Length: 443
Image 1 (cartoon, rainbow, N blue to C red):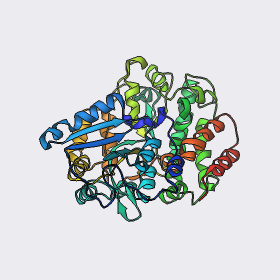
Image 2: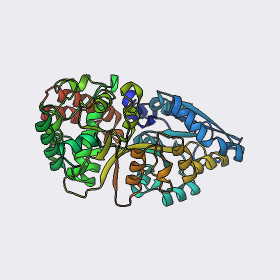
Image 3: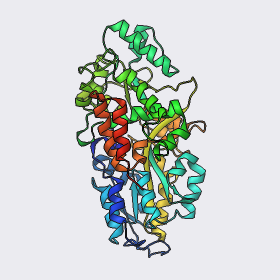
Image 4: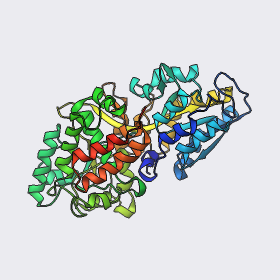
C-alpha cells in the first residue's frame, strides 16, 4: 500500500502566495463554525477537510470509526485536490471546516497569523508535549503559540538497493557520503554500467524528487541551522552552502557514468516518471535509487515486478549517509491538524487525532507511519516503515521538514522544481540558483 505522503508528487500544489493574495486586506475573520475566542456550539458533527483521497481516505475514516461510535460524534471527511487554495477561500468566506489537515506547515502558519486558526486546546497541547519531539511541535507553532498537532509522517532520503547484489559485489552499506561515492564507483567498475536510476517525472510537479536530493545534502553538509536559514531565505539559494549541496548531488546525478541505469542518459532523468525506477530495481538493472519511505509500495506493486522489501528480501534501503559517520539528520514530510472551531466535539476529535491511540489505529491499517512517540513500531505494515518509525522516535534524530514544503509555494512548488529540471538539462548551477532566488516573494 502506498502512503499518501507522496501526494505532492502527483499534484501541482497551489502556492502559499495564493493564500496570501486571497487573505490580504481581509480583516481577521471567523469561520463558519465560530472564530477565535468563540466556543461555538457542539452538534455531534465535526467536519474535516484535507488532501488525503481515494483508498487512503477510506482508511482514514476507518481509523476513527470505532471512536466515533463510542463518543457519539459523526466525523465527516472531505478531500480536495485544490485544498491549498480552497482552504484559504473558505476561511475568508466564513465556510471553513471544523478541522483541516495541512500538508504544508507554512499554510497553517499563514492562516494562524491572520487569526483564522484556533490555538491548540489544552489536551492537544499536552499530547504534543508528551508524544512529539520539539522539532515536530515547532511545525505546528506560530510565534509562541501552538496551533496544530502533527498527524502522519514520512522519512525521506532512503537509498534503495539489492542485498543479494551487494553480497555478490562484496560491498557494504556506506556510513559516510564519501563512502557512498566510493561504493558508486565500485559498482560501476564491477558491472560496467551506471549504478543509479532516477526519475523526476511527475506531470506538472516534475522536478520534485531532485529537491529531495538537495535538501538531504544541505542538512547533512551544512547542518540544521543553515537548513533553517535557507528555508526562511535568510541565506539565498546562491549561498556557498547551497551551491555545495548542488555540487555534491551533481557528483551522482550529472555524471553520465553513474546515471540513468535502465533508462538512458542524464537528461532522461526528467522524462522518467518518479515511480518507474521501482521496476529497474526489481529486475536488477538499477543498483541504487534515492526515494522516501513510501517507495516500498511501488517496489511491491505487481506491475513493477512484485519484488519484496526487507533486510533479507529482494530490495532493502539505508538512509543517505551524512558527511561524517554516525550522523543522524533526516528530512521528511507529514501533516499538521489545525482547527477553525473550538466547540467540545471539535476539541475531542483534535485530542484523539494527536493521541497514540489514533496513531496506532491508523498505522495498523497499513501504508503510513507517524512520528508519535507512543506509536508501537510493530504496528507498521512493512519493515521499512518500522525502520522509519524507529528513526523518527529516536531522541537523537535531528528531523527537518521537507524544505520545499516550507518555502513559499511559488518557490517550493514552482521555481525550485523547474530549476531542478533545468539543472539536469544542463543549465549551470549559478544560473539555476539565481533564477530561484529571483522568484522569492518580496516582503
